Length: 161
Image 1 (cartoon, rainbow, N blue to C red):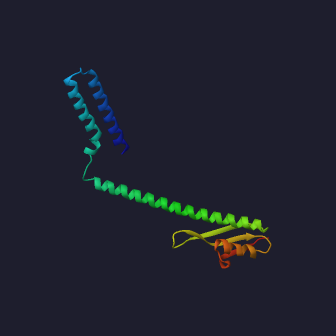
Image 2: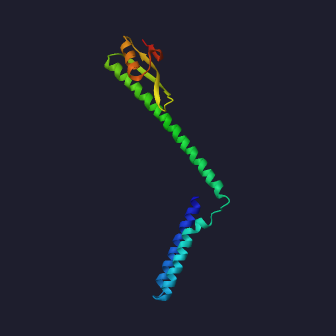
Image 3: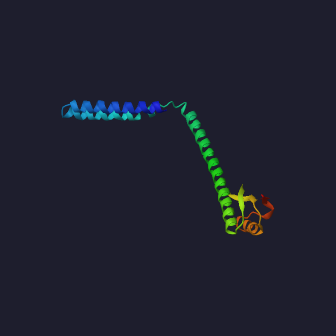
């Protein structure tokens, strides 16, 4: 593909140089006007040569291959964006839990949130796992349920000593 574009550009530049030299060497008058017209035809032919040399029998196959490749790229980009959105939501929820625990004076060493896909088309926090020290975690548990929508049944508390 790149080779054909390079060849086309070379042909276009070559035709332009040839026409410029011919017009520079030609005397003014009727002959120069005819030469200008001929140079215009040469430049148009050089410009349109890739279109004229297209193999019409293989064109549909090439277009189908490009279409399939574009669909694969779009699908891959969509999957990557989806994973990235999930990771961001999980990370933001984990940070939120750690910040709220610190604000409540509780010792939470680690928070891990798992997100799920909703039928309405977005990720939402589904469950969490918390590594905690000692203390009453009921206030944080209620806050997680109220703010993030994770019920106490899907909150896993692992006490570390």
